Length: 250
Image (cartoon, rainbow, N blue to C red):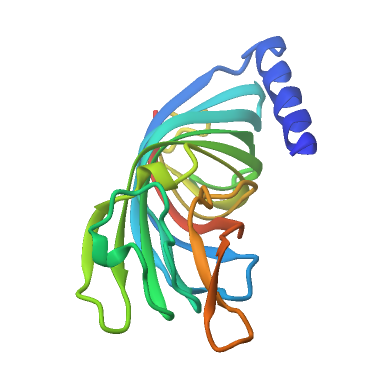
């Protein structure tokens, strides 16, 4: 985390100091996102992905002809994934669940459906024109701050009636910090190398630095005497995603 904050401070400083002598570009994106959660606990396993979408703006701040600082503001819908809990218990301690779901059975699946307001900061690099009106671009690194504005869960398990769309915002950390990288192609619609209207398409990978879950629940571990003993759930779940970036810049 200290390294991340140092890099973020450096990029922010460069942003404010460097003149935008080569101008700004402003655009929009509508990008499908495939996301999943990975846990560091061997009894909590990734068991499925979410298909979501990211909608928002993108700004490139050019401090050289082919180098820019990039940022924007986006809404990310349905981020998260499915986690399989080998041991049950009161897994969502702060959520006001119906009584029957306060002690979930072993083998319970919880699908997290999380919405964020995303603010990325990164470097945008362009190649020379590869062939007429087409260039490649790369963005590395890109740091992202995701601010929670809603989270729901679907809960299924042995002997349980499925519970869908339960509000679990109190059991999700309000800020998610991540880093990523990616690249793709840029096509100039007007055939003007200085760029007036450009279409973008690319692929990005993103990985979280911070735990998504608050770890407010307890799990029923075997006590060695044929029974179970509740223990605090202190796992770390990281959000990862692959984004198919689709956008237009002006």
